[in-house]
Length: 178
Image (tube, rainbow, N blue to C red; front, side):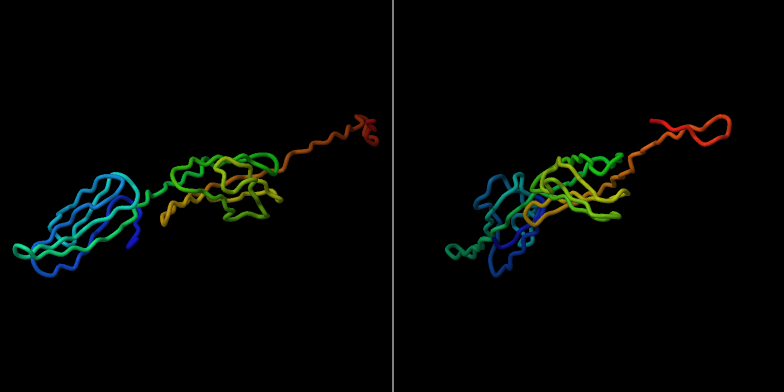
């Protein structure tokens, strides 16, 4: 391709020579709309993502014409959603991102210890840590040259372990429980 773009708009830039010029759609998976198809610097809007070929054709007089083609790949911009922040007693947590387009990847942004994912490319996976505390994790989606990321915080708290030591009501040494 001659160029790639995130989104469905592209600013075309032909270099006019002589005569009357005109943009047209040669091929692509959808329709194209030009802001001004007679302007060499027209903006084109497409209605389906993919690879398009556009032609700038100039006509001078009755029999003189020439054209040049440009190929543009349009990628849909992902919108990452890592899901809701949360917390748990323990060292592992089930996370669930809401994927849009492209591929996704979980990464650890920060935390007091080391964390890992059962499957870092799965939107719904388990995040396990080796140290209690608060961790920031990011879900990043990539589609062609486009990407977006969303970060959430997960808190991992120590599981309480209460113990019981009975006290003798007469102030003597504690009772022994067996």
